[in-house]
Image (cartoon, rainbow, N blue to C red):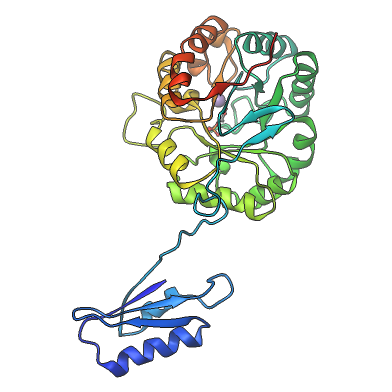
Length: 343
Ligand code: PEP
Ligand code: MN
């Protein structure tokens, strides 16, 4: 941290700040300038006193942070891309993975037909919500445990890996038992107790970005998982709240570039929640691939018009297969390879 001293502070005032930095357990290094004097404080902030409180001293202009607040997720800490291996399906580094399936698990037939269709088109991971975070309590809340049972059935038949949302701490254990990746939804992106509990399950985590979450906050949410002993986090950009209402959310592709630069974690893009419109999904997928993301999570439904949630943004099987067909040239540009099950 750097403590900036107010201009024209007499030497004894500077000495007071230096003494205070030392008292908090840091090594103070004053740097005297003609215009401005600063004091660098050397030491580990996690074990020493809080330097930000020095702003209350009359001699101090401001306290500046030099290091990032997130450490374990940062590229500074680990320069190489993290590659997550989900029981043979890899994501990160050169490995690109597509997760696809319905917004909600609705029935055995709906899920199994979708699982077969998305696998045939090149997905390796099946998505589907059993526990749904709905804005209104009167909307379909998901099939719960029955939904998890159907996801396991689909995994058994197709070999697809399963990603599904866990809404609450009390569900972590049984959702983890029935799935391969735990999805933490946008509305829970800063539910820190849930993040800790999900981290402790040992399962890879797909961490959606909160509806209005700043990038630093998103990376700090991921830091909760890593600092609780689970290195397998995928960041998922799913659009944020902006003034624009044409789309349900504004898909923030610049967040992909920032996340790839600042962290070593795989970055997945969700164009379905990101736009709220089936007609935009294909173009946003290509944009996401070109931005060097590591994967996509796409909502696919046998009959979107009859979906029990998010019908307007789900694509049908034909559109999904078509959009998958448009990705290879974009993947070639980034040097990534789509992970598929060889037929
Ligand atoms: C979903 O994936 O269906 C979902 C509810 O996502 P989000 O948490 O990003 O809104
Ligand atoms: Mn949805």
